[in-house]
Length: 222
Image 1 (cartoon, rainbow, N blue to C red):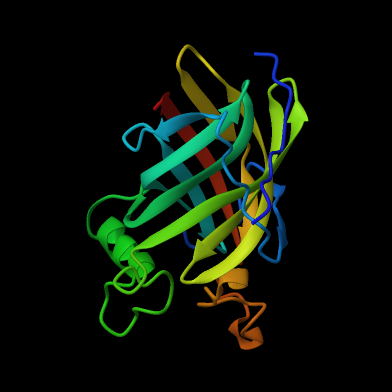
Image 2 (image 1 turned 135 degrees about the vertical axis):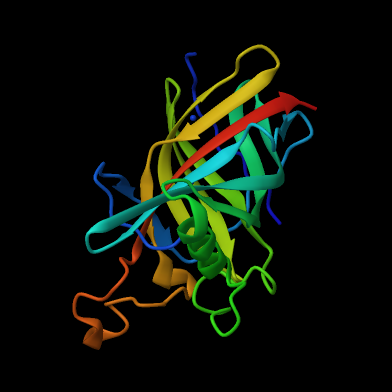
């Protein structure tokens, strides 16, 4: 595979279900999977801190929003002179939590999204068969700490390339990267449960196709 380094100039960066949101997020550019950026020998590697890093998600059906988080299993970011050259991370789908509810309602929603309810395993993320998702960086552009990241996002063995804005900094021997809120269409990954664009007869008993994500990554120099 041809080596790819996408340089950016720096001055100084989560679900899931289906989303509409009160605070508008940028629509992620979704396209076919692209060639993954390779790490070069001269790059400095940063190991993602899975305890600090998080993906926040926001989702809704008519009249009701839901929010929650996802954690990471592992990941790395490589940079040459503070220009990101490659990166990837693995998402722990079993870590999916809801943050706007309590008690039985919270447990029921989490179980349904994970697919741990008998007979409803395939409605959303089916974590028994697909315990992880992953993101692999394919490109970076921008400057002055404001960047646009593109990468292959794989959910339930379907891979699509997504593009979203982010900010990045390198405090000390660490890296901090946070995306701006961005929205993806869950049906592009085959998550079709109660989608009005798939099932026209749902009327107002539907779940929005859009999922809003905010990715926050903390990394330490390897």
